[in-house]
Length: 87
Image (cartoon, rainbow, N blue to C red):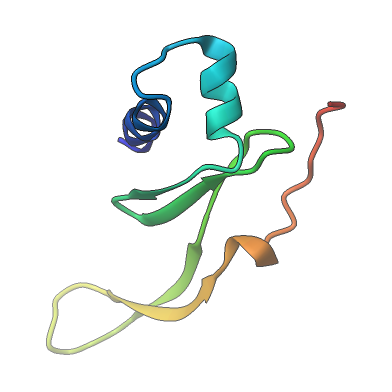
């Protein structure tokens, strides 16, 4: 779903131009909304970055299953995802 949304957003920005190099340039650093929140393509290596969520399962007698409890949101800026390409 996120990939399809990214393509649609890039095509909107290029006004439908499907030239590969133009789409690549357009998508570098592009921010767009996905079902899981905002996603950004990191310009250096085209890595898709978005917030992740740290949660724990809580036992709640009101439910016959474990209930996820948010501990914190981990923002993309906090993640140490290495850049491995040699661009």
